[in-house]
Image (cartoon, rainbow, N blue to C red; front, side, top):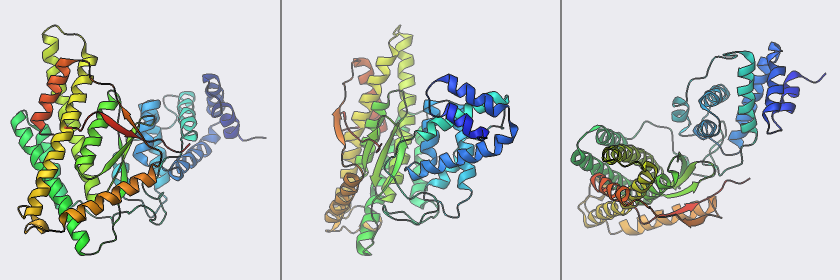
Length: 396
């Protein structure tokens, strides 16, 4: 006789209707001996996700978006259990695992509800597309993209993280502006120092990649903001709108900077938008959606150009000998070194995404939102080169 798990999967996983899920859940709920096999099969689905290029945070983010928080917690439990079997985990995975939600108790609130939620999750995992890998699957030896050695966070990144945390926490726009500007200057100088050090030591370091979630609502504006932050920090960002993330390609120190700065600027922008929106509503305004969209579009666009200007200013100072660290005395080879790294990043991005498209997005329609968003970007000392995005799709 066919095992209960196989019967339940046949009913639930290969159809789209709720009837199949109910039938499969009923079979599993009636047979407690199937529990261990059900969990083991879930680990197999997770393992297949790694083989298709997914990482822990990617899976949980998509499950949360397409299903719900319960399913995300179920996925997290499977991920923690599956990854415990490996002696070697790829870089960035440990931080992703530490950030996962806790797994819920099994068979709660009742066996049928639990089985139904599990089968819904498995149906989604089964249909995950293949996407561009940003590192090897767990347990595999490093190959392909450059993978940094495991080590504690560099002191410079710790300083940058502290500056951005203060910028997010302060209630004074001028202080947030100064702190964020200082953080971007440190990022640019750190990138220059790393580039010169790599050139002088003939390092074989190559560009790597990471994925950063771009969540609804207003995901287009958020993707533009991430693209601006990436470009200003010598990286390339490719947005997959269908799956809700951007893949950022660059050298490791720059990837860390992009992730830190984007997260902080998004927090700062959301706080500023909420405050500006409250003022608008106090004046009797009700069209909050168009206001928010226009605010974030202006915020992202303005920040791109300002970030690029900050980076150019720091680079020019380093070339002239007014920088810090290895660039302090000035270096005539700086611009060729940076140009070579830019070319390496571009080549890597084009190999990963040979079929990207550039899309011009719709402009903002709310003048008040645009004005307030531009002002908020000026206070944060950050902005964009225009609402243009490069997008890519995972391989199906």
